[in-house]
Length: 175
Length: 183
Image (cartoon, rainbow over all chains, first blue to last red; front, top):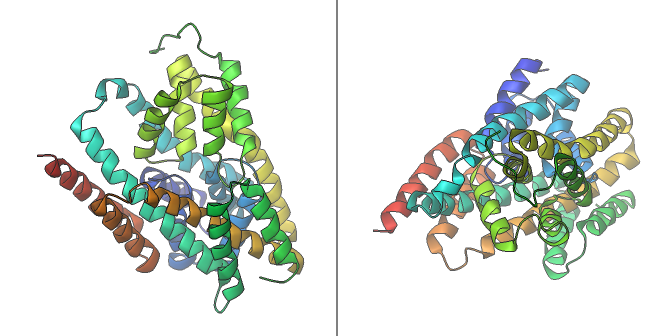
């Protein structure tokens, strides 16, 4: 198991890479805690992701659950802070003079670059979380993920309903 | 203090309460609710300014909605607002997630719990994919942007490369290409 300092270091670095927000960093978190260091199984990672989905709030909170799983309650708070503070300090520094930036060419260029990078990260994240939820040979879960995509794009319902439906389908043994 | 408060600026208490509500409103991310509360219900910002601010928060790393809370807090109440608004959005959901996480540590081994979480996990993945596709659709007329997104998807999702070199390499390259493309 990792030490608290090790966790803080990893997630503080991730904070500064988190273009596209918390969800966009899921692939890197999984690569780190499951594939590289074997701190938890892919199934546990997938289940922690599900627990975070079942709660209201910003989707960054999956990070807190990873901290809780790996280092208990101190880990919960330490990892949350490590993931939120570096980016927040950077944002605060930037926000103080952004009004002066306006439509500077470099700002538009940065926006044009970060946007598509974030899109790629979010898509990779969704794809990997679907594959992880399914596991080897788990095509019903893959099918459920694809069905969710279609339903979400077709119907403007609160995501809560789809999450509840997923829980019920899981309980019924359909996934 | 830095930022002087404008006449209609929400107080620290109002910022905290408002962002608490936003934080507790959404499942699977709260950004759509942030817009609804900030622009429509509280009228803290006109729609155009909200979009501009959101654009700024999205080019910075970190949880987008937290960045948004921080910017609005700083704008209305200086550094105190920059502390209070993000706390507002995080504290109550953190308490809920902590309770759920502790329950998971105790009951996560039970078969029905695992089955339920598998279903939720698949749906959660679908929600993220749908978000990504909606974002991609915004770039449908910009082939280089779509190419960049596909490149990042392949590097991270398919080749499973570490994020640091991918972002550190592709992001500056894309900025330079965008800057050159303007001349």
